[in-house]
Image 1 (cartoon, rainbow, N blue to C red):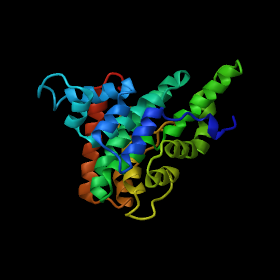
Image 2 (cartoon, rainbow, N blue to C red):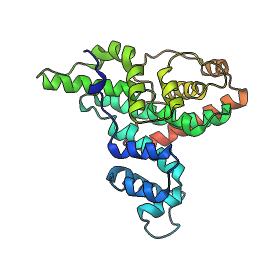
Image 3 (cartoon, helix red, strand yellow):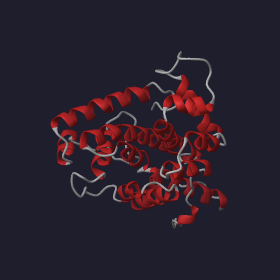
Image 4 (cartoon, rainbow, N blue to C red):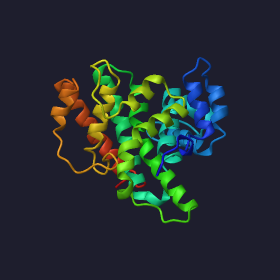
Length: 269
């Protein structure tokens, strides 16, 4: 299958607008709430988060605006990306097991990247973004393959048949999607270099690579297409420049993420 950039799915317009706002000087709660209200999935997640622990029981039912105020704008934007990465784009019905594994990997890598950034002195928000969507292109490619097969009246190709294509093109596809979503250039650059060696300890790729590595150790969260290969996690994290304390913190974070994913029936493997 020949990959054409215009065939790749893009993010829903509401999420694109929100991310454009998030990285501009015009971000404010009122404008964001107005845009967010047009997407019931995103709005529902924000309100649901505001009613979940540790906020549950703090007051009566909340409106969208008050929900945003309660959980904070930073977490609202995290939810926008998380929903986009795990609901909007990661939908390829013909490849459900692969999609589910991709969803779990994205969530695990994004959450671990926050702690990895703190341990290495990087921006947690940027690390979360890159960690959560660094492999989104893999599912986008499957979606394209399935759609093209259906339009041609053919049976969709198997994941095994498509793995060479995914291995070759998923980085470019992920970077393209990040460009379409108007994410910060630092995030796009890291996604584009996924799988290569960091340029030094100051490289944002360091916490993202660490998060990607640890996400693979979380049960049910391998990188899509991964072969079961033994990896010395401590040695790999040390090679990325993490201290012993930092490595210990990240491994603890991976355990917490694993517990969190197991507690969500729609995400559990």
